[in-house]
Image (cartoon, rainbow, N blue to C red; front, side, top):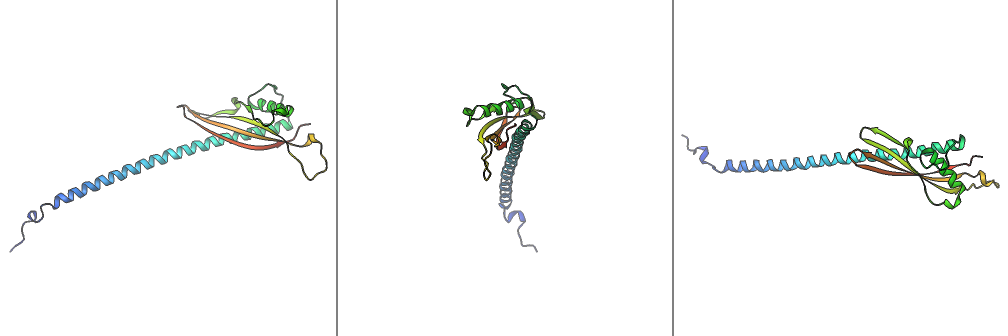
Length: 187
């Protein structure tokens, strides 16, 4: 003999509670999924900005390499340049001459503008370029030696490379790097 009542008559609200708990869990999981997807999107944006910042820093570093190369050329195998030049390597050599010959310009940066040798297109839709700023800080003191001719003391320069990475959509990233370089006067 079966004395138990039919199952449907034992707890009529049991099915309703289960549905309510299931719906709440679904809502909770949906909110968690949306939060995780937003976080993933934010991570993508941060990593993209970091990559573009690194590219811009590398462009600024190439500007410093460019300057060092032409300063060595100026010392070893001086190219002939127009003294009024303000762009590219000719502008760099002209600026060095101008700053050496006019001491009243000391303490101020002299700008060398971008030319085609200072611009490149690493990929479709983006352009990298740098311009330079040159500052003559005077003669580098030489110590622990007997007297030395002032003309033989090396010049001390501050070089700043200002880089820009531009995208066709109008977005641009900027970075500046600076170094000090000493060079001797060519006799």
